[in-house]
Amino acid sequence: MTENLNKFAEMIHNSGKIVFFGGAGVSTESGIPDFRSANGVFSAEGELSPEEIVSHDFFLRHTDEFYKFYREKMLFPNALPNAAHNYLAKLERAGKLSAVVTQNIDGLHFAAGSKKVFELHGSVHRNHCMRCGKFFDLDYIVHCKGTPRCDCGGIVKPDVVLYGENLDNDVVNGAVKAIARADMLIIGGTSLVVYPAASFIDFFGGEHLVVINKSPTFADGRAELLFCDNIGQVFAALDKMDLV
Image 1: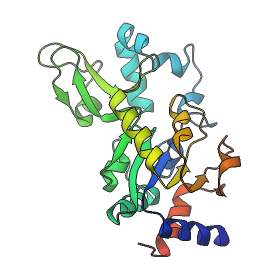
Image 2: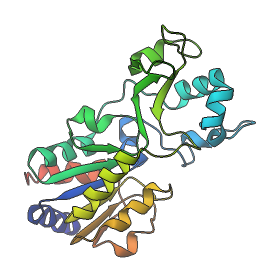
Image 3: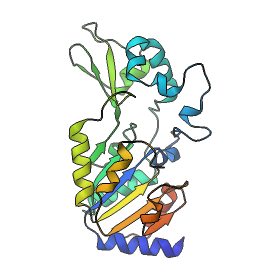
Image 4: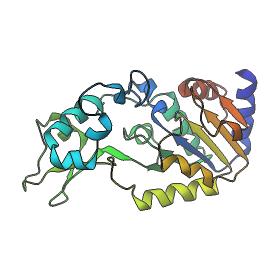
C-alpha cells in the first residue's frame, strides 16, 4: 500500500477542492454496523424485511414498532468519530477539502469537526414534531418509551430519509454542485448500490478519482487509485505522513 499512499499524498498536496463521498463503511470502525454485510442492520431475519420497517408507510401505520427497530438497530449515541472522520475534518481545516457528501445518518462527520457536510439521508440528531415542528435531540428519542411525542401531542419524527421518501432538494443540489466543482473526488466506505445517491458521482469531472472500499464498486474502473482496505487505516496512514 506504500506506493499508492505516496501517490495519494501527492494528489492531496496538488488539489485544493477535494470532495469526499462516503457511506456506511466510514462508520463501521466507530462500532456502527453497515446495512448489507453478513452482520449488517439489514441481515436481521423476521416476518418483515428491515426495508419495510424503515419505510414511510410503516412509520405512519406502525409507529411503535418502527421506533423499537430504530432504537435497537440504528441508534448508536455513544459512537465516536474514527480516523477517517478526523482526517477529513483536518483536510477541511487546512483548506484542502471543500465538502463531505455522506449517506450516513450518524452525525459523526460533524462530531469530528467538519463544517461543510451534506447528509443525503438526514441525521438521527435532528427530530421534529410532525404537528408543530418543535425540535428534539437524539437523547430525547433514545430515552423515550414507545413513540416519542411532543408537548402538543404530535408524533416526533426523525429527520432521516425513509424508504418511500424523497431526498432533500437543497442537500442534493449542494452535494451535486460540490462534486461538479471538485478537482479531486475520494469515494470511501460505500459499495455505491444505493440510488439516487450513488449516481451523484457522475457529476465529477475533475482530475483525480480515488476509491477506498473493501468490496468492488462500479467506479473502480474509473479510479486513478484503488484501495481495498479499511478506510480508517488508509486515512490514519496518510495522517502520519503529516501532509497538512
